[in-house]
Image 1 (cartoon, helix red, strand yellow):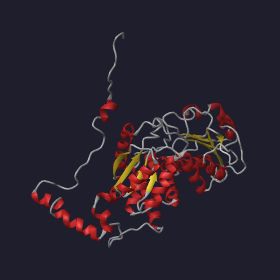
Image 2: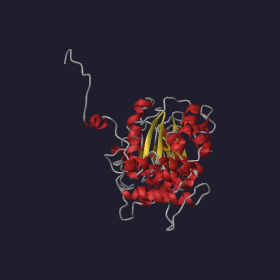
Image 3: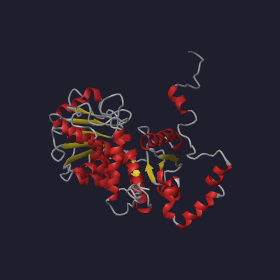
Image 4: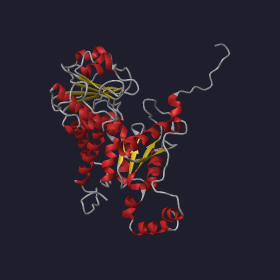
Length: 402
């Protein structure tokens, strides 16, 4: 309407976010002087002195044993890009809410007003004593690789980059079951991954560890080849691990005869017609968010199995299937680090949640509301953590973690 300007618009989504989505609550009663004397002064001083003498008990006698820091610099938020730490807060709050809902874990949004690697690493080092684990979130590549590597080397608590490792776990679990549907083996299929950033690198690494032997990665430079001088060090390393034959070409070229497409790149980079050139009974996972690489609905006409990040379609590949269980297992095991074997164990456990009598082309991955998913992942990670040096568990007389 002429001369009418809309200043504010509200709907149920915005109303849900009013005042934020999480809060701090007390786990103990604070109704009497006796309650206060134990929870705070003077009783709390006895606990402080005990921890000063026995710092190994901090995880047992404080929230550290169940606390995770969700750390971002706001540089790669969802599919929205570099929108800054303030605009990233709703996502980090949501992540914390998911930690609590699905893993019973107290997580705290830590949004940093810097994109300097040294400053981020030092800040996380300084706050680490209050947490049992660090979840890096929405930090752009290649900066995220250096931050994760340095923190893993310098901290005595697990450091997990969900955009990388959570995505890789769920993608591998879905692929395991999709291959069961089409009756193909991981070692035999040709896989094309679109996106050589954080998620793509982690997916490729986990696929190779799981036994994949034929993988090509495509990014804005084309198919990543080790003889391409334009590649960054991170992409060059990825090319060397996947393309020793120095194959060149575009995404549509790489897909000719391929059995599997996994997309973690950008929306609408792939014409649906290209899927007709893939192998028989092809598997397609266009996972870019919020717009997939190719329309998942139209892709179903050409492929045997289709999965995406969309919640309104079958086979949603969602990181919430992984990270709450991963951290539940790490915290319960009092783990000090994450090893690749834990990620593989998590993926295999998640895939196994879908029973043979349930498995079909429209059900290759559990629902995010299936409690068995988090429980299975947590158990697998905890068992894997107990089997490696550096992860210690204190057990009570019944053999349970204390």
